[in-house]
Length: 483
Image (cartoon, rainbow, N blue to C red):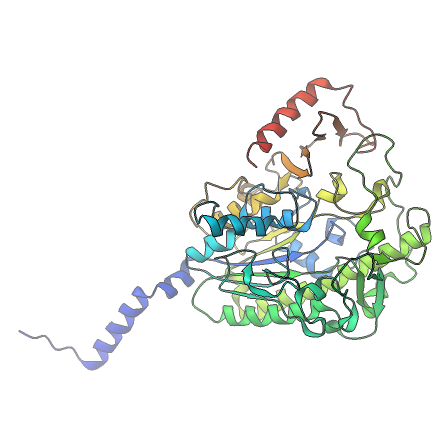
């Protein structure tokens, strides 16, 4: 016998079946989104990280709603290698071409490398989008001007990868540009120098990060309206050199007396010290040297601070947009600095070394379901931990191939212990635990610093502590074997 249902009941039944069967609707209910904000060359120069003179209200409010990791360390003190570790969850090559090297391996053999973090989320039903500098090249392309769409830094990672260039013409120009589209011509940096410091009248879009933030918020609105979960990464370029920002962001620092630079002396023992070539050789300083001229050092620091405040404003725009869409209630927000930056400590202006200032960077993770929000953690953690952490928070399968550990225990309990942080530069490796940093050179020379003492990284105590050296050396060897 044929059973006939009333039309209204049949329609309702079909609608309910459709809702039950829709993978997009199920994904929306069961999976949290991820919003990753990457900031270039950002040391923990933030009020929420204890630097009182810095104006960073938007990053500070994110810290108030999440967990700020005050002892987060990157795995390499240079952009490309550090972003490799963040985006793959694995230790890897040293240089800025690290992700392109991975792409070449992938081209030769699709099983030669493990999936990247965005690829992992994409394979698990997420829409993945990058805007700005997320991998080393803004936009994630290669070629002479970093605009060759056929040469990808991260094949298979993104549904969309976007880099608005505006007046700067191409990603390479935006990366090393100043206000109103001024860029370095192709060729030697030493032959085509830009001003190291700049403060220009105009709105946020006279520098490239204004365009990146605008595009990032538009992508966020679009993704928030979809039923599919999203993984959106937005990469801001400032405070990377040159230190230029709209003039209004200098206002909190004009005439501001700054605290003295900690340990500004050049080490008189063997270290990973360098002569700050990027800072001195690629940009104009008009005969001034901040290592000898304290007034110029403060001028450099004020311009860096203005760039931080400029970046902070865009973080605020992104967070406000997330809240306006209503997706703040089901979105995990991560703010990550790709490495630190010396502002005169150890007589260095730059990164590219294995001192604390080059390796320590901000990390904030905000989960809408977290308890004890706003409490910081001093646990030692490292960049490779981000990938497994986001998988656990979104309830994705744990990626066994990552080298990091999930930070969910610290997110739940800020007093939870951390673990050893490992980093490398050239042929030199370092580990940091709660008390010590040890740096091992290729020829066996060792630097050992006690962070429980007032001297910290101004006194090498390796010769006096052979047992500690041996213990930490074994950890370095173990970590190095994973690379």
